[in-house]
Length: 92
Image (tube, rainbow, N blue to C red; front, side):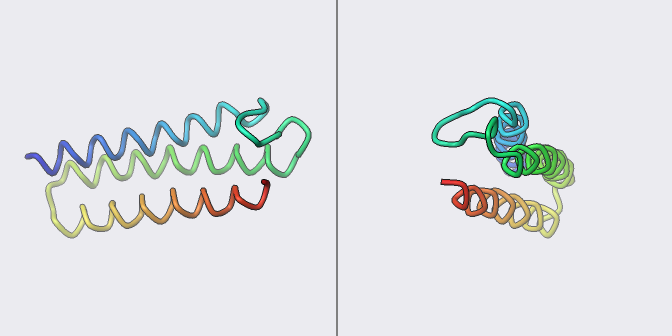
């Protein structure tokens, strides 16, 4: 029960990160300037949609209560968000 709650919170965080990146695909934020870099804008569009989809998948896997599914969801979320951060370092 508590694991499903924690997975739901993790899924909400991943969906929010995806929504934030998708929302800022044309707006300058932090040190990134997608308004002047078309590749960054397209990348944020794709990555935002991808993270929102992964967050929904994580939520569904977490609600199953299956330990293996939860592990797959955690690994998927960890690699996708870490990969996103490493990819964004290219544009600094």
